Length: 222
Length: 222
Image (cartoon, rainbow over all chains, first blue to last red):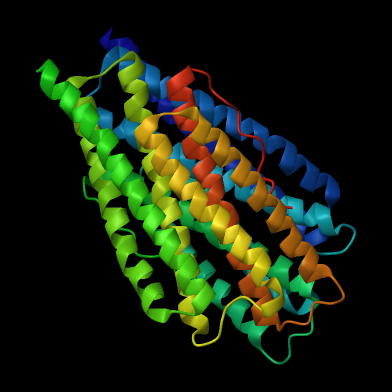
């Protein structure tokens, strides 16, 4: 019984890691699609997101069964509850990668991001991809250096998000209204993506140190 | 012991309802602030959101204690887990009301929404306020007629959200780029707000009927 219990807990961790890997793949592909107007890559991200959703549901069911049959307490209970929260964050990160891909598909064969904003967005997307990768490493190793790294990357994305709004408000902004909307949404998606990564990092930090870190208000929302 | 257990479960339901009432108040005030450029009302929504966050944390702790000490199974376990999910949705709804208020504060003394979009946004905000109210009634009564109503209201908001993008893309659109960004974000916040209301409705439906309703992809994201 005890052995089965340990095996089930370990499986929960493995499944969470698998979802994180899929999210990393999704944001990698969504970035490529965004930067090259690759509609096939975009379609793939959109289709594959259903897999992330299914895995999240399966993980939730598994966590519920574990709670029902084995009634974990203390650290184990905290782990199961944190897994539920983390799976929700990861599922949401998958959605946001899908939203980026949907923008790409909508504007195909045009690029979503206008020429003079591409460097800014390349840096932002790069940070988002790195956050997803650091989330994978963090779940694999529980090494909080990865949580620190996620924190730093999130700051980078927040600064870029603010820079996007500044660029839109500048007199030099000449893009069409629809492009302004696309740029606003793409920036918001990336900001939300890394913010969810930060939530995962906060949960792992809590599990490792036992200390709850209070999240400040989002920087992204004016 | 059994009596305490029942009392704790009931308390979880009451606390969830209290959070829902605060969210309803928040979106009501955020709407007023948005429509009248009332910066004091906006400040209040922003300040009060911290209370929603604290109550959500308290509810989560309480749910964790209940799981640890009383190891509920079957329906009760589903109720506790659904409460955790619903509290997360409600907390997020509070954040979105706060984002609307932050937009209002940012543009004060100007109105965020340009004149020719105000009817559309009034209808959208009205639907969002109604969703919050229906969520309160649904949690109070478990009457699924309220869940159906939330579903309908969510459709209304989704249609309006699409209409906003259409208006922005139309040749008649003359607003500044920053206003375009504000309108995009305000619409997105309202769409997300009601979508989270729909998530709460889906959870209550599941608890009442035992049937999991699969959520389709968001309409809002192109």
